[in-house]
Amino acid sequence: MNPATQKIWQTLNHSAAAVRGTQLRDLFAADAQRFSRFSMRWNGWLLDYSKQRVSAKTMTQLQALWQAADVPGWISRMRNGDAINHTEGRAALHIALRQPAGKGPILHDGRDVMPAVLAELDKMQSFAAQIHGRHWRGATGEPISDIVNIGIGGSDLGPRMATQALAAYSHTGLNVHYVANLDGADLATVLAKLQPRTTLFIIASKTFTTQETMQNAASARHWLIQALGEAAVSLHFVAVSTNLKEVAKFGIDPDNAFGFWDWVGGRYSLWSAIGLPVALAVGFDNFRQLLAGAHAMDEHFFSAPVAENLPGLLALLEIWNCNFLGAESRALLPYSQSLGLLPRYLQQLEMESNGKQVDRQGAALAFSTAPVLWGEAGTNGQHAFYQLIHQGGRLLPCEFIVCKEADFALPGHHEKLLANCFAQSEALMRGKTLAETTAELTASGMPADKVAALAPYRSFPGNQPSTTLLLPRLDPFNLGALLALYEHKVFVESIIWDINPFDQWGVEYGKQLANRLLPVIEGSDNGEHLDSSTAGLVAACRT
Ligand code: F6P
Image 1 (cartoon, rainbow, N blue to C red):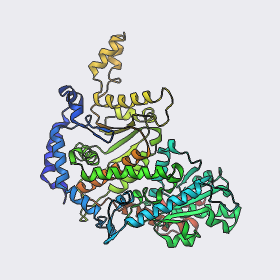
Image 2: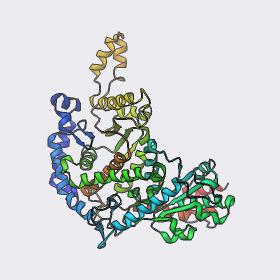
Image 3: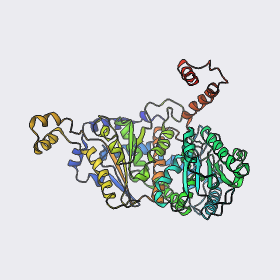
Image 4: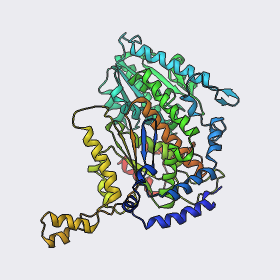
């Protein structure tokens, strides 16, 4: 059902009109309890959404969207293994991948998936033990020092981001590298640093047909064979895929192939064997902690009432900002170098999941869905694009993530990092009026004519909404919970927007045209079907 036709949607539209005339700084001045009213704690975390443009009334109205869309019913459908990815006829059971042993069955087509999930985890663990224990030897009998994960999208972004996020836990002595891009520069620059004798490749692809990954895998195989011969392939390549037939064709020993299932979407697959490079980088106990954190967030999501449900609140605030206040993007600003790749990872999770044009009945949507997500680790972003957030005139909701404790505790750094993070959200909320700027410049002794000339440049409108998520520390458990938080936030939004977040048909058309263009670029097709621009570009490459 089109949510925009619901009465609650109209009510929220009226509330938005009222909110447009209010200033966040006035809301804070009028209510000394605003922070405690609009913040919540979970497991040592603090979510502060008091700097969002909401009132108690709007929060209640937003929470009604949760009931109207039957979010609890959809959670049950997901947990029951229903084919909620209806355009592909698949379930979405990534929650099973992090459920610990002994917690009961999770059914798919009437069969419990947990034994297979736990068996695959055990297989990963013994493989990791062989690599870490230096028992796994390459073709020359030497142990492995470097792992190269070749994959793209969900088979790259999650493990790459998590490996960087947990750099403080990487004590295994292995160097873990990632190659994704079809551009040969990606693979070539990684291989230039490595020795075939001590390198092990993980070919990670759910389908094992993705052009980028297959090309990079073929080139890596060629590089290895040139140095060590064909027989070395089985000692230097392992695979993670749902397509074990294609894996075998590539020459990878089935014992060294790690499987997962079609009910795990690519961008939800970090918790499966796709997480193998993370386990190799940080050790298996830490990988299990990552899963435990995600499971803890699952339990919270399934049981907490909407007013205290972290994924639910983040989803409702995003819907408020986008569908009612008119925001078109959200800036994700982790004040953590280790979380520097989080914006990229969430770009796929959020935009590939919820960037949709039709509802679950196939009817065109009357509103836009997922906002553009972008961002950068603070404080680097402050010296790049914050100018536009402060004075560019756009509504730009910001999400700050910061940890109480540093993961790399160099003296003098973390206090300044925290001060910068909190100062930004304060400045965005408060702004600085022309009168305040004028008074400040006058007090500094500036002549009146100069004050009048400069004050407009040095004033800030403020009223820019933001949320701050404060974590105790960035460890495997909290990272797992953080990523599961965003997975469920995306799910709640999709339910309220009445869209399928688990398919990605929008990516297909470009792939199809690239396959049609390749023979033209290679010269075996004259390209007479091409438009003049595309034909002109191809021709320019030939001259
Ligand atoms: O970008 C499209 C997509 O299908 C993603 O959903 C997926 O994560 C990525 O390609 C890689 O797919 P695969 O793991 O099958 O190589």
